[in-house]
Image (cartoon, rainbow, N blue to C red; front, side, top):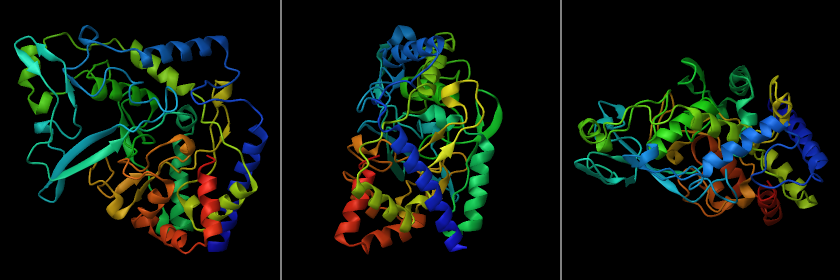
Length: 392
């Protein structure tokens, strides 16, 4: 069974490498839309990018508490739609052996800024309450290529989880089934550090509310500053939602048509490094290749792409952040996609590591065996593995 799994992984990876090599001569830049988009779709991408970069004010619904005034303020490295070194704070505690997000105190996400004087109130940023016994950082994630991830049918992620349980149970992931606010139906979570977000449309509305404090049709309720909902009634009497949903659709369009990150040079050392990557088990979770389902948009229709993630939850032991969201437990984290890694400055969910080596050495739980194998590598193989990662 182990030989079968290894052979399958190598086959998938070789397909991925051949595809990357075939695309290597195509000029591409971080932040570009898919090439060959129809004019109408390209117009939607550009309009969405404009909305994504626009700074909103109180008159456009900002606040009363928020984390920044535009999406691009956090998604900017190395271009609009990327990651950043911004780390937000989540908190909670354990009550009766269950995770408690302390919603009555503003949990679990801190909104670090306030709009200041509004009506008879003066809104400032939130702080972690004394009752919190769990405090975790969450780094901004890149958005490149997520339209492809969204275009993979849910059943593929479910089948992948089943395959992993059968082939490699010690590293098998699981799906996080969550409620999609835009459809009202259960769906597979694919986005966010806990795979707590099921679609780009949901992602857009959720971020608009929780990062900027702007309500929309599927997320119509303001965040209560530090959990004090009376302040909303007293000092922010504006009719909800703040936005009619057009901005949320624009954000969705931008992310949907945002191309995946371009690959760096594939040298002999990089090829040797990918073989090491496979041999020590990294690809058990950081799956090289996916294929999208049927889609009316040609750029998303049955396309092979290379995220180096399975988008499933894995028990990461002490590397977990202690926060629970939907069916994700405190030790669970979604496998982070590795594509685009070469332009990142910090790594892991909390940005606590400054190098890929540090991130590997911090792996625990279901990632511990691969970390231990990494520690046994000779200098040449270890250098090749890092060079491979820095080519993504």
